Length: 171
Image 1 (cartoon, rainbow, N blue to C red):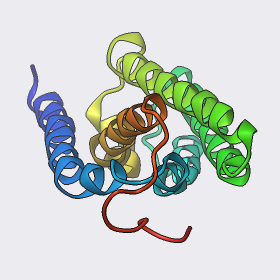
Image 2: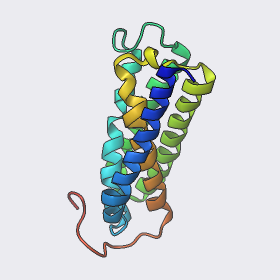
Image 3: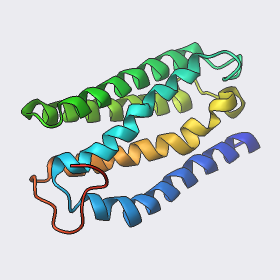
């Protein structure tokens, strides 16, 4: 493995380790005691920012040789995920909301896994091609994948009322 690729892989791995520690220590203990809707709100709010993936389409932000076969699906997949997260937030208080949350969570997870596949095995994005978006696969994607896992955990459990503490914000 060449040095830039090793540094990139180490950054991605440490992103997963660090966000796992943060989630296990601070996020999950709070979410697991909340009713489904309250637990999903902060996670969906975070994912509403997935429009940031549109940066893959901005010349000068990414390297000039970032493959379009990676950039376009990653950017537009993230935009769809952002819009689904916002739609889920808007419908969360209704019966439809939990269904839309499932749709969002499956789409969002598949989108990130596909981008990972494309970036590593598909078109093989090199570390220097990321340009200023280097932080997305090294910091943001690990956080998003971990929070998708938290959402699956919340969605699969029976809905319960909070046992300890209050919601992260608002009712």
